Length: 136
Image (cartoon, rainbow, N blue to C red; front, side, top):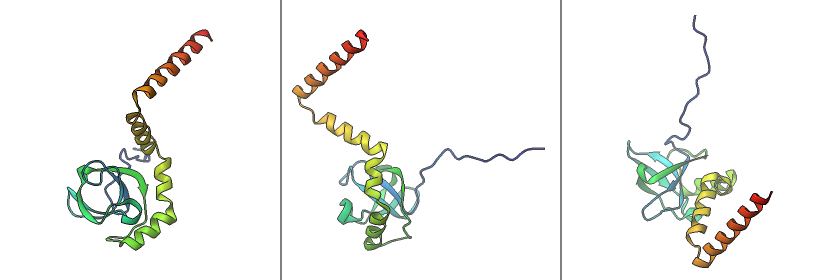
């Protein structure tokens, strides 16, 4: 006979109520929001909460969102006050700041804001590091 083995799912981030997402482009680009209702296959209702993230309640295309691993225990159509309480009690901003996606975005932004002299200093540091490695 066949033996049963635990099934592992390949997808871990689902479009679901309470999922925290990052807006990738458009007017709220780079801001976090929470999915509070699924409208259809292509759109969801999101809310920031606005005082914490700057995203007001609105319908948004799923294509504009990058889902995160963070999920809050929000109810369907949760209001802003409930979301604020959940975000603060579950430390969502701290979780986001500690995740690899946020660190990569921060590093990319820092690299993009470098001046010509900063790039020159990085080049010198890399050359020096390479020389030390070759000696060792």
